[in-house]
Length: 107
Figure 1 (cartoon, rainbow, N blue to C red):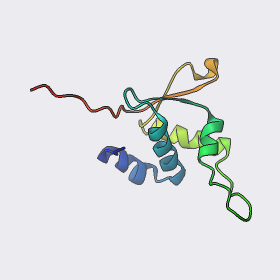
Figure 2: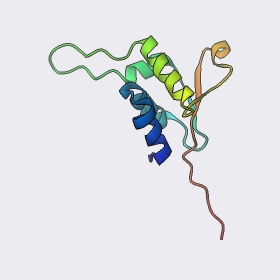
Figure 3: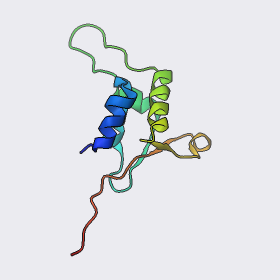
């Protein structure tokens, strides 16, 4: 996985939100690299963003649904993620990110 300079600027200088950075990196790892498509649920993202249960003591809390929605909205408003228009009617979380597939150059 690689991050472009423009992505780093948006994440670290424009948004400056650790939850948004965490969410964006998780989306990058979970998406299809060929076309930038992510299909999942808020519940799955919340589970992946919650720290694991330690050997002793209580598990630290992960983000709430509202916090996750706000982080995603920040990424959308920054132009880093695009929502599918049919998310609500399909009951899915379908997102689009920039494709990571390297283009083959012909000589």
